[in-house]
Structures are given as structure tokens and as C-alpha cells.
Length: 450
View 1 (cartoon, rainbow, N blue to C red):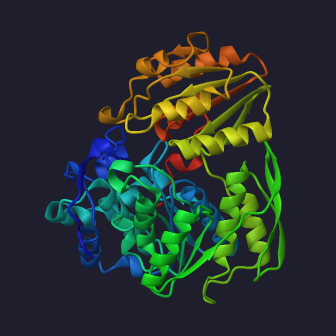
View 2: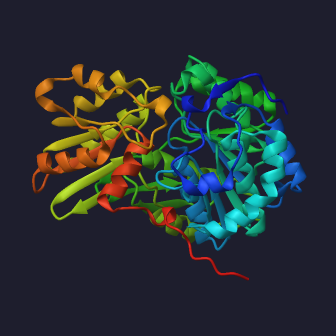
């Protein structure tokens, strides 16, 4: 393991301490004010705690887009198979408690705070970043909660991501796109190499990417790591606002007819990747065809083409935060064709290619309301007024916050139109609060002492 020399201000990435989250502030006092890359600090903290990440088998997923969806699909299937399952994802939409789930539910705040005390001396000694501390707590929490299997989503990249201390039984790389370019590299090949850093000797790894330059890098890195690389080709399927359905051919379970509440061709690809990779699980983690069907049918991913209805009005909440995410979102929008007009509420972060993302969105939407989410770190807040000046004035409005934007969009959509909220997890999270559609995992879990 190596630390690497790269450090970044917290405001430059998703890994900054969520200053507006009181639970995170209680869990992690006195953290370093910068992002640190490498595995040494996380490894040392885990070693001091008895290496809790080695107490259970792990499934590890990386990728530019879709890794959170694959993680949740995996976890849903494993739960349907009767396994007590931990799930670690990032970032959260509303509350830190969303990041660490056991059997689909958050750990009670009181329990997390009690366990976090074991980290306090390590926080002062190692001075980890927020993400390193959160990852360490997640692995400790899964051991204390006695999970039988854990699903872990990479935070960013892969090679130097804090989660890469695990030795997984199965790994997946959803796809590779241009995102976090200043950190991960300016080409698909550079980024693919960083994501391929999660490959381990003898561990099967699956990818849904179909770009020749990406597959060439993954194949080379897999050969170097002595990992077993498999490409998953997604099937065709039916897509509606209520979800997706398709048939998937597998070697382990035969032909599976699958129905999912997840919407879009990109989600069919994610489901296919998740299911096909589970074929490589070792015998000690048994998964039946019925568990696959049930898990796929029950898997939900908050903020990913999440459809909510308010009478005849349709709301679509999607955290698309890069150009590839926007393309997938627009494709799903056209495939499902919700009622017109299509009104967008858009809030993008300053370190994203906002002009490119807005071009893709504005070309599909009838009008756009631009805003800045208050929960976004100050260093990542974009200039919405500047962005508005680059769009057609007759179809663009500007509002100072997400709540006001939601109200304006509701009126513009009329009684039976569609409002799309997108651009970042911060924007979607604030819209969920404004619409009172908070996901259950963001709410405090009841604590039962003893």
C-alpha cells in the first residue's frame, strides 16, 4: 500500500466533511481539512481496530456512473437470499446515515456514535480525511453488526480510494467516463487505469463498458493483476415510467425474466452487470434464481430517475452530475416520454462541465430553472447567473435556492406536466426535502439499548 502524494482541498471533491450534517460532525471531530489519497492511513486505522473489514466477504464496485445502482442491486439480491447485508455508498442525499446501511436500514445514530468513540484516538493520530474516517467506521460498523456480506462502493477512482483496502470476492467496474479530470486524469485511458486499481489477483471482475480504449486498458490491467475480467453486454428491454423489464441469459440460473422499478437503458445495463457478476460468488454465498428475481424487483436507488407523482404532476429526481449522466438521463426521458411540458430544476457544481451538461439538458427540456443548492460546499457553488446568460432567455429562469425553484417549476409545469430535478446530489437532496419525499434511510432509526 502507498499513500501517494496527491492532496486536494475538501471543497474540490465530494469528500469534504458535510458541515451541515450534525451527525457527521458528532462522529468525526478534528478531521484534516484536505483530501488525502492512499491506503496507508485507512489500513493503519483498521489494523488498530482488529481489521474489521476482514470479518466478512466483500463485493466491491467502481465506475464513473452507475456504481451506486449496482451496489444497491447487489445488496437487494443478497438480502433476498437471506444474507445479513451491509451496504456502504457515497455521497449521501440528505443525511450521513444513508451511507452505512444494514439490511437496507440505517444504523441508529446512538449506536454509530458509540462505535465512533473507538476511532477518536485514531483521528488525532492519523489525521485522516472525512472519507477515510467514514470508510473506517463503516467497516467497523459492519463487523459490530455481524453482517454476513458487505457491498462497498468506491468513492472516487479506485486505486488510491480508501475502500481499496478490501480483498473482495467479486468486483465490478460499471463504466469509464470523463469525470473528476483534475484528479483522475484527462483521458479515458488514464481514468480506466485508476478504476482498474481495484483489481486483485484471482478475483473475478465484471464490466459493462463497451468502449474499445477502455476495454483495452482493463484487459491489460487485469492481466497484470492476474484478475479474471468479464464483459457484460446488456440486453434489450422494455422501459416505462414505472420501471424496466427484460430477459437476461445467465450460466448459473438460465434465462431470467426480470422486472425492476429502475428506469432506463442504463439501469438495464446496471442490473445485467450486477446479476451476471453474482454468478461468480463463491459457494459460501448462496444466491438462488428466486433471490435474483426478488432482489431486482425490490431494488431502489433514491435520486436515480426517481419518479414521484403529485396528483397528475410528475416529478423526476436524478442526480446526473456529469455529461455521461446527463446523456443517460435525457435518453431515459425520451424513452419514457412523460407528460409535457418538461420543466427542469438544475443546480450543478462548479467543478463540473456545466456548459456541456446544460446543452444536453436544455436541448430536451421546454424550460429550465437554474439554482444553487445551499448544502453544496462553498468552494463548489457554481455561478448560476453566468450559466443562465448562456441559455435562451425566454426559456430560462433563475432562483436563489432549490425550494423556490421547485415552486416555480411546479407552476410552470401546470396540473399535469413533468418537473425534472437534476445536476447534483445536493440539488436532488434539497428537492426531496422541499417535496417531503425523504428516503427512509435518511431518517433516524429507532435505538434499542441492550
